[in-house]
Length: 263
Image 1: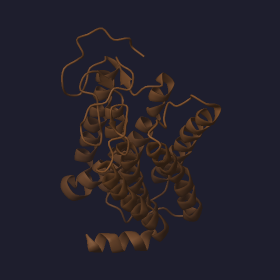
Image 2: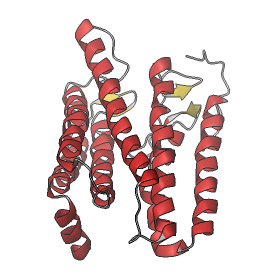
Image 3: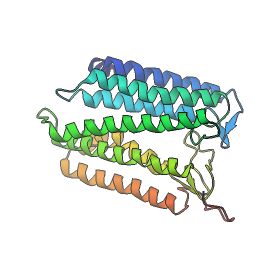
Image 4: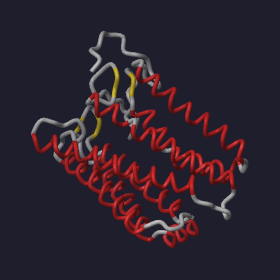
């Protein structure tokens, strides 16, 4: 682990420090969750900024690692765009959590509507940056990388981008659940619904292909064909959970028996 952290810091000290800051902040949010009973959508208010801080930490360190392989790439611009775009989201969500109110889907005032729109815009721009990195991995030569590992990175970024944009399905509905309005269950941090369909499941699975597939390929599979097969199966898993959610069915638990207005 120490060797990995040293290598990561060498590859991209800026995103290394930003990611580390997000990780430390996540621990702060976790501590706050243990010292407050304030809830948003039925779960502790600090769980949401905790999730976003952890997600931003993983994304920052992952892209810091991958972008090191790219030639003729403006890493300085990429670093600061990610810090500004995703840092804004974490800060705003944490402020709203501290106030005990919602950040996403909040259009109760013109200011909150603007901030919700900005979060969507900034998340889109960050995803487009990742898509551009993926394009470079498809167009540049990487003779020093094992072919299976290179394809794992490529396919992981493709799945990540697709299911990152799947977040628009939640924004368009102003709800992350199908069958009830923003239902949550106490599944620790994720809070996925146990009673209705939850679009966050496929969103989570798809976006974390960015870490899962290259790690599996590099350390376990070590084979290009196996990497393709596992990547396709992983993508199908994400798609199946999306279809399941759209049908109003929870990932685990039983579907709500009572009639619900689909929001």
